[in-house]
Image (cartoon, rainbow, N blue to C red):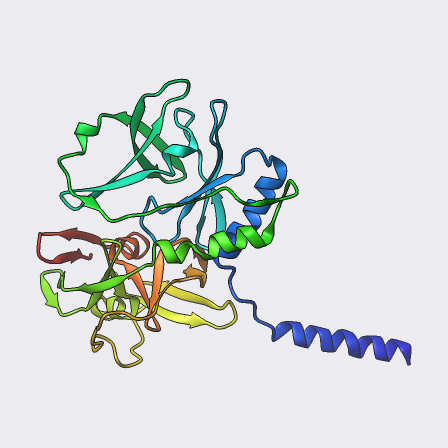
Length: 318
């Protein structure tokens, strides 16, 4: 009887586990966990900056100690569904990241931080660039960027994360949650038409942080009869977006019929994205219930070329 009961319990647990789905961890939850670990390892590095240097809606976090012997102890962000470390330069201190001004040079953003150099009273300016998993800080003169217009931008700084010398999850969580109050992601309508191999398509999209994002099903539709065709579906077993290349898109209805308004519900996509069964890391947004991707990111994973002629997005396929 005991063996039968144990077998039944095992079967019930297995069935229940098979039907339980877990939501993907948000970057906020992951950041709290990582900061708890870093501040526990060395609480003297207790100052944190959140700043979105790659303008993808998910900030980069930097932990530092603002003193003459200080520096940046760690940098990280979230790519896809995983926390990734950022290598940091040793020629600046964290204060440089807490005082950033963004300039617009012919549509290209330039991030410039400033700080008072160690053991001096000189104000230094640095061009900050994030390339892959590395941050660089290049010393510049203020006059190098002063002719360019300034873009409204705020990073976020905090230093009150300890209670009795130990990191407080409540304080860290409150800091991370308040990031949206500083830099809320906004999306405006993008009027740029798309040409596929010379044929113009009326595809509506959004401009998010100065980059064009399009409904992935609309892009799959206009590439349906080309050598860069792909299908997109929702994999309920993985709770993920599933993209299959070299497969003709299966029409579900409503493609290319969306009428865009000023977006009301904009969220970073937290669902995993699989391409031909492989997990990939792509920046995407869920806007008013639909998934929007950067056209250049799709070009990289699907296999087509994309260009800009000043008026239209140009897609060329084989």
